[in-house]
Image (cartoon, rainbow, N blue to C red; front, side):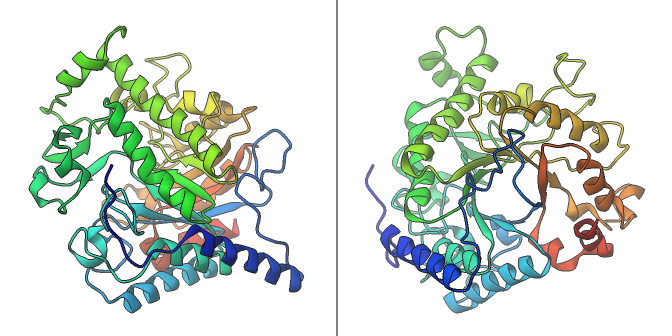
Length: 414
């Protein structure tokens, strides 16, 4: 693939030097050097890292959390990013999960995909600095882990390839994209697409001293009534030998995950691989191994994401299911899903971080449970009774700053 030209490149050599320097400074100050995400496992077999992991997602898609708006100067953007890292420290977080590849574009000078639109307002325009490189250095200087959050398949929130940056992979390879619900996504069934998205994300692993590569919950698209994903041609070309299209689609996603896991270990073994899936794998009414939930989305059947298998096969180092429901919610009860995930993870060595819906707290559109400042504290207290739960991950930075109803403070102090 022809690389897309970039300037402001921060080399892996420079970042390695920074990391070595930071380690020496820690030693000189009598502090314990920062260890890789894999090294932090305490080795007792239950996958739990020493101490409580507390993470903060920083979403860049549509400028949700960062930058506050597109088109800020490089200095203004950097100041906002550093302020978010300072916020994470004040709120007693141990990690930030920064969205660095929101829509087949990048918050670093990638040779594979254009600069992210959220930075300047124009996809492909150099912002004049390296957000990911800066985030890694500044997070580590504050004692925080930096997890690089990527979306594997999303291309755009519209269906017009001509609106993508000139030289975008989809403009050079129109057959790589599918349209669903008015949006563009990479076709997961194409081997060349699978290789491209892996290469694009591995570029960040190679260049930067990130602690983890983190994927969110979007694989095949969430189902929309009246919409059909037309991957007929790809299925005709590559679906031979599969009992049905659903099994073939799951195979495509399994390959993406398992191959990525192997390639990360080859490129930089100390980097962890984590995924934050939708919180329901399958319902017990569908599969005896499923959870006491429903009716709602099932990742296995609706997103073709066999999240339980990824844990059992140990393809991932941590799983952070998005358990964005309250205790007692009939459809998906937090108090039932935590023990279900605890049982899935037990004995695998995979760490379990619970994704928490801080954004729901105090929202008048949410049920009464979310008007209670102790709801998230009760989540932490409940999760603590399950030995594989190594911590919690809060969505997202805007709400971490607001601390609605004091609920985050209560959860951290629980």
